Amino acid sequence: MIINTEKTNFPVQKSGVFAILSLLIFLSSCQQKESSPENNVEDERPNIVIIMADDMGFSDLGSYGGEINTPNIDRLAGNGLRFNSFYNTARCCPSRASLLTGLYPHQAGIGRMTRDAGLPGYQGTLDSATVTIAEVLKSAGYQTGMTGKWHVSPTNPLEKEKQLKWLSHQEDYGHFSDTTTYPTSRGFDRYYGNIWGVVDYFDPFSLVNNKEIVPDVPDEFYYTDAIGDTAVAYVEDFSKNEEPFFLYVAHCAPHWPLQAPEEEIAKYEDTYKEGWRAIREKRYKELIDKGVLQGDIASLSNFMFPNKNWENNPDKEWDSRAMAVHAAMIDRMDQNIGNLIDKLEETGELDNTIIFFLSDNGASSERPSRYGPGFDRAGSTRDGREVVFPVEKDSLPGSQTVVSGIGPVWANVSNTPFRYWKSRVYEGGITTPFIVHWPEKLKNKGTVKNEAAHIIDLMATCIDVAGTNYPESFNGNKITPMQGNSMLPIITGESHENTHETFFWEHFGSAALREGDWKLVQLKPESEWELYNLAKDRTETNNLAKEYPEKLEELKNKWNEMAHELDVYPSPTPIKK
Image (cartoon, rainbow, N blue to C red; front, side):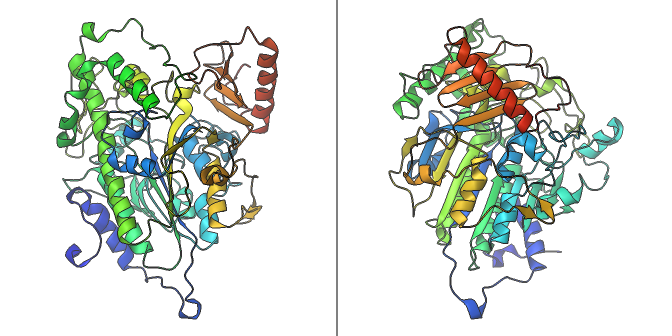
């Protein structure tokens, strides 16, 4: 079938042609939904757009102190609000589960990853007692669409030889998961994206259009562009109708593997040759100068690798290239977000659209080269080329045939000024840049919000914005009461209080609790608990556990109490507390 895209209003970028053609094929089979002539009153409720980056550090964006070129996201920040204390759950799928449901991840069924451990908090998929934002808003009359990374369906691999053939598109073993757990079974009218977590950006595994497997992609394909093009196409179509829309754009960038078009990487080929410490210090200065953080309460934490010096680094070329690819992936994502903003403006929807931008967790310290092929990592491409995993840093990252990540040292830089990274519940792992853009409602645009909020609050905020209610039951299931609170009072300037008095975290034994300004945190189950006063020490540099033993015990008891309430226990392996 040949579709003449020149006769459509959809923006077609060369690298996203397949995404748009798939969408057009789908749309051509659907009857256009128009407002009823008997009820021609325009629905004035705002559209809602959530844009999520994957494994992006706190200071990667220009508006958060970074050197990466992100003018479009920075435009949202400059005409909107930035938060400096917005929390996630420290990892990909738990954060997505919490975002979608308004629950802590264990309550939602994904306390760890998307494998079923046979326990309530660790089912590996959304629990039947959950309802998604899309389901709530669709029931309230919203059009709903999603594009990008889903990662809340069960991901059960085949035996290794078959799995590797499946990952490299050399064999077809059918659906990537139970289709009743796909986005279009959980409230989204339309979906184009990947069901599993990790992707080859030039030829993604687990790619579907609604529930249909996407069998191949064109030579010029780059997944970030395909996600961006699909988001633009959805807005084009949604804007023709009277009903407002909810759009969830879940980018994979800049999650490993480090892969980007060469022309994008070239922009940053010299940027990171200064080394880790120089970039980190520049970012910290910019964070303070831009007012994102206040230097008197947020000192630059100590570099976590004191024995590493760039001057003596034998892998300068590889390391500077790795961070250049990371930057290129974010740059390309920003360009696609710019296309989405332009389409919202062109269709007259921008002023009455609330946009949320965030990351699912802090930058990743993972070194996937050490993992080798298997589970979600192909050992070869569709056309049979070997994919290498350069443990010894003997193959430069960036291309389709190299699997690598930025590693812990650059992750420490990416999360400036904090310590740690993805999967750890120190501030570096759980604090995300969070931007709110809403031209019709925001006051004091360009300001920074110091109030603390959490990813579980997005459900309540969307419900508040849409003027609807969270259900007690849905599809015959009694629904777990929502944990989040609306951020709308903070967003509109009516409140300067945190959304919660207490915030809770647990992920693979890394544990934390924030109550007011006090934060209890533990690296792993066998580690000592640490205590910080975030009002005076936002970067967790002064452990007060020995000075305030009563407060330490009080918060430890509170953590244990909440762990039982939130289905952390029973856990797949013992967590000693």
